[in-house]
Length: 583
Image 1: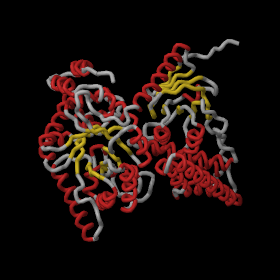
Image 2: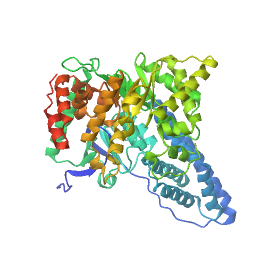
Image 3: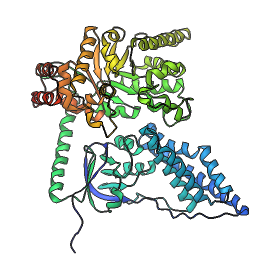
Image 4: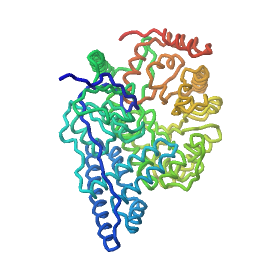
């Protein structure tokens, strides 16, 4: 019987986790509900309310089991993903609205459906990607309640094999546990963005994944061959033999590269002519430390503390801060950990119910990061006390985000000084010599770097914001994203100015933005004089390989030439000519 399936069908999505995987599709079909609105007479409404209570309690039990499994398999920070679902389930307004419909004579199933749809619709207009993605969590909870109301069995991954690639409309936290336990090769979903729980778990599992593919679950069939390219954010359904051979070759090279990079783990990040560069890791939580260390970092150059504020309805306590940071610095000892104070906007904390805060038209340039901390010092003081107390358990460096002027820096240091004085009065120990630095991510700070450098112990360049603020480009806006360019002459000159002014003041200059994690830019950054690179754990070996393959003198000569050029194409040609020595 002839095979009429179309080959080499390419779907483009969002790269959730890098790498290439080839396997057979295991299609996890979405729950399908046939819902009919029924009129419930007054004498039967109590029974309908009882059915709702039973379904909610059963859903709660299932979510608690999922939380326990994720906690066991991936750790507490990933278990917070399931915790979000529990918080949604326990939101009193959700149940109140459903009960209201039931009391008006609507059957429980349709009442749940109406309320969930209304909530999801309200999320469509949220500008912030992270919070917009939460609509999928609400839908997942709604589907679980509906399944339990209708007495449907949950979809199952029990028959999956390790050779499979999971394809689904969306994956729930419970699905991801099974994926880890089954050791599947990868997964692809119709929905999801970079901040979806599916993407976060993919990175935690370190398996290739692409999300936001829109309709892959409608086209793929269990047993189909699928290629996941987590580097490009593409999947290829039913690849032709030529395509399959190409990707199998790439997969073999990927495996060889991984083995080669592993050999660099204990070697220094040193150029061929002897210049040593510090190579650090970026982390969001404690569970990422193992990967950072395994990949050969010599410290944590950016510990983002924002995740401590997500998925909760109250501010983290001082003790939570202390315990969290202590755990991280003990694990990294004797290496240093740079803790960045909260870099989050007031709009996010307001949406979490943690602050009374009005809507901002442009939260990226609004009350966020150090500005938020100076306006609401109680948030800042709580975190600073936790950081200082934890500093006795390892080497901590403190870093303020989004400093735009010397006044902000001095105001932050004034609060820090007061916190130290209070701790001394309370006889609480802390590292009296803890270094304090600033992120340089606002053009104004870059321009007055000479003044800032005199009042800090170190700086780290945050290229993500520095580039988009300097070029007036929103990097996630598809209409102008092509204008977001790390090689724009103005950006390279700003970076050089920051480095030079830092060195004049005798301090080290690092970089923790995405530019630092792209091996293509590494030789130019080395030549510009960058002291420290701080990157995601997966990029550490790649950056180290480039550093160990280039001559500092060659890189410096190229950088000097780049700074005289005024267009991207000319700059590209110089970078491409930097000699890379095979190691």
